[in-house]
Image (cartoon, rainbow, N blue to C red; front, side):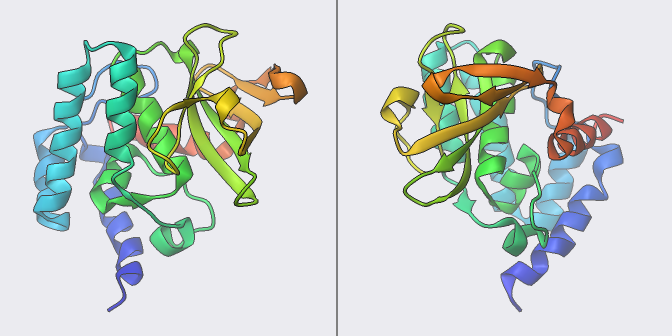
Length: 223
């Protein structure tokens, strides 16, 4: 049987557990705690490897929570970049699905949105301020396609560092001439990028339907 054919059923199995997930990974809580019931469920439904990835994620958080930010960036970027890239159609049976970090790690696959969201939520849970992080929708010029990365701003007007699943090296945005930013967002706002590296705030991230849906699923996991 094709692996891709199993994914939608796996997703349904995972989502059916949402009401009893004891997981703390929301946009507002700076903590990461994976409950025993979730971990037992993942092991029984998805196997030891999936359980081990979630365990490693939690251990990474505990180990790096008090580390300097530059080390946190490197560890988180490297950790999530180990997962395989797979399109939403192949993986979830949908054209554009934004997965939670648990879904990404449990199935060991996702696309650029999933990588960026997982890195954002993990760094935020480690205490990196939300105002320093932005998920950036870009055009990957060499690939001629839409792409998503995570940017870290040490200062509001600084040249941000880019965390990208396409490459493991974390480089300043000024060195990523292969990426053309379109808009960016975090838990606080939504910005439209313009020429000259400037950006204009145009609203709240809640205006993005996929982001709103993702946030709702994270919140539901606490109920």
